Length: 93
Image 1: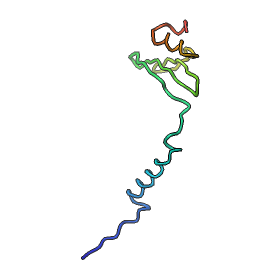
Image 2: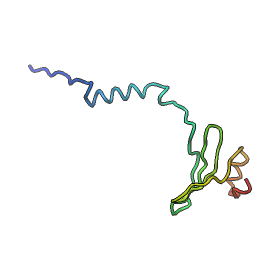
Image 3: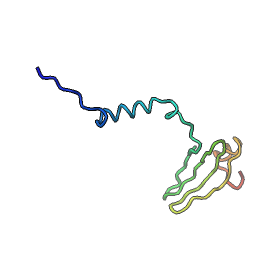
């Protein structure tokens, strides 16, 4: 009867995954709050887009093209968000 020993898990693929899973099981690592986030995007075709970007408690309406990104407006409250959703221009916000 032949018995096989388990490979040294320090350098093995199994050891890597066990280490990775143990790191992911720590709530402090996978429940981290993100300060910067993309709240919503709208493609305008031809590599152009509009996006609402959030940073902490602030929100900004930005426009992007293939070559640049521009800040259109700071969204200061829920009424501003509702007007943007209804299609009013950034100048009115």
